Amino acid sequence: MAISVMPTSKTRVGRPPAAAVSAVGLRKSYGDKTVLDGIDLRIPTGTVFALLGPNGAGKTTTVQILSTLVTADGGQAQVAGHDLATSPQAVRAAIGVTGQFSAVDGLITGEENMLLMADLHHLSRQEGRRVAAELLERFDLTDAASKPASTYSGGMKRRLDIAMTLVGSPRIIFLDEPTTGLDPRSRHTMWGIIRALVTDGVTVFLTTQYLEEADELADRIAVLNNGKIAAEGTADELKRLVPGGHVRLRFTDPAAYRSAALALAGAAADDEALALQIPSDGSQRDLRGVLDRLDAAGVEADELTVHTPDLDDVFFALTGPARVPVQPKEAVR
Image (cartoon, rainbow, N blue to C red; front, side, top):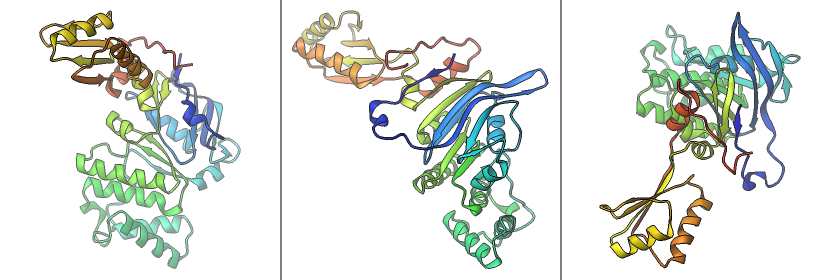
């Protein structure tokens, strides 16, 4: 059963943002292989949504369905307010897609790739040149614009790929593993591009194999496993679902250490290091509870660190071969 983390009270203030993408019960099979087994999605406008999952989990299939490249076997979905089944052309007019494999034609120049996209979007010759020049400058490709795209580095090709996607000014962009194979510097450059898109009001649907990428960029993250959404929430909310978080207190005064150990019954004690370890979900409420108990005992720690599971822990817990059962905590409904 999927674990869904409800938004905090802060995110519920006022009317919720309109959904750029919504889906209910999406299903897709290839022969006897069920790829999507009834998934639900709701992605607010102007946000980054990351879909994580192991290879073969159905991430690319989800992108292909929502971008009208393949047809779902069941369920309903709307993209940019248009129904996938009844208005696929309207959906295509509102979106841009950058797939796992570059759509750049290496035999022509970067500028010619851009102008080709402008022609496909039926822009006038003058407008096409203007848009191409603006996007090449925005993506720092002006100096290379007259060179064959086959001479571009991997990072440059990926930037050109996204620039081509933006020729039609889409308000929703699907990025299917956009940084796979890029070096760390190029990956960070791509992150800056994605952030800038969202600042401009674009909604980004991101699939990625890099958990750090989802942690860095996404407003909300869903983990897809065996055709179902195993969990969904913000990065911090998902991390709190996995056991293993704790607060570590260290003392220099043995007397203070002993007093704290009495006040925090059940804490794991390290007498040699004068340190205590208390299980914690990393939330502000949980941390305040620990500090309140120390205050009541008149004890102050010399060092306090909070350790929470990272997205790697979440990913392995939800998708690993020996899947760790994740029990929702009080904050989860």
